[in-house]
Length: 129
Length: 150
Image (cartoon, rainbow over the protein chains, first blue to last red):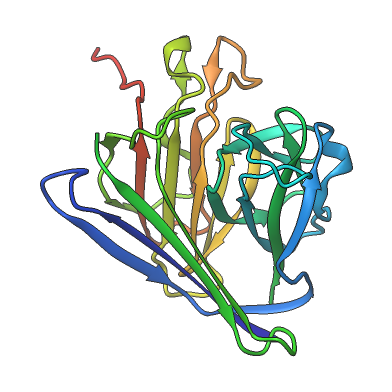
């Protein structure tokens, strides 16, 4: 077992008149399997870019970031689909955007799909202990 | 426009031999622009005493004007009982379980879902117990359909 500590901060001085500035964190107990922080060049076929295997009752914590470049290193403005396997879109990331969320309670994996061309994505998943 | 910044760090000293220390941040922008999202639900808190699946953020119904806009969702399970969780669903697809103390931050795709009638993926939450669970939540966005008064 290992401990993973994700921390989210949300900050804004002008979203409302009440300044937003808060953080939330938690120590998560992690067991195998898990990945290190990896990068992959994502194509327009989601089924070819499965980054988290199908769940079998367990919960995975999934991190994904759109790096803003394609496979050649050129800047891109296209969006990166976050999908459950079977091409179910649950969200889209623009360049440099990221997400962190639990996935599980079903038998699906997570896959990524570029809206066009290629997009280099940074990702990791960790299994809840 | 407003400037709202989300930052994430992920660290671990014992996951692998090489300590993990990841840090990233990003201003939340309207879709396909560099203009900050200018609307928010604010940070709210709810206390639920049933296991009924509820709409935390309701479906956008028959309003293509909202489709494709930028929406960011934060949810935190404030329970301190480790076995208590909430099942998070988008449209008709279960995404995952948010256990006690866990939080999530994700973009919300509001494309038309498979419910029919042009309903655009609601975000649903179902507590695992009826003994009372608290959740903190917020949405930062550039447009969201409010329910018409009846």
